[in-house]
Amino acid sequence: MPAASNLESWVTALNDAMNKMEINNNVRIAAFLAQVALESSQLRRLVEDLNYSAARLMQVWPKRFPTAEKAALYEHNPEKLANYVYANILGNGDEGSGDGWTYRGRGLIQVTGRGNYRSVGAGLDLPLETEPELLQQPPVAALSAAYFWKSRGLNELADKSRGNDDEAFTRISTIVNGGTTNLPERMAFWETAKKVLA
Image 1: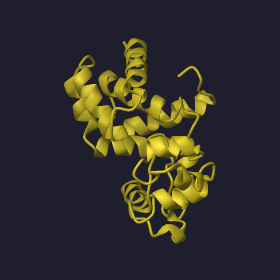
Image 2: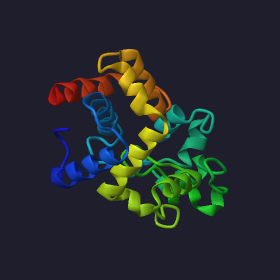
Image 3: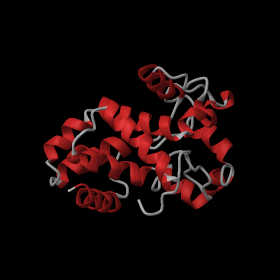
């Protein structure tokens, strides 16, 4: 992750988190770090960026923004957008509750939605629902990503890949991202991580 900064704190945070969540062999570590690298823009983005143009809103959420007129009401207004697109899902209240903005994606593999903040917080014994900003600190950001990884069975899936199975890595990417967005970039990070760890 050549673009990363503050590497000393990240190395400690990631090593501690990986040790706690049994991401403890080169195959698991390479796959995990590849996903983290992409999801966090190389450890530089810990909060979801919701500053979209109207055109981009129509691409990302075509059902919610079927027309340019509708999208224009939310373009370049991250708080309003979060409260709209995340209303009444993921354990959030309605648009007026402000939950969408309060519980927008945070961390290295972004935790999104009040329900997820609650469940990840319970799993880590951290008050993430009442202190969501904790996910913006390297130790908690790394630990929440490793917790997600382990809780979704990704250690075992990485083991099955034996470090060279593109299909298994693609399945990991789909679990992390909900699809195969940026798969070539994820695979490039994976190849680099495998070489570094060899």
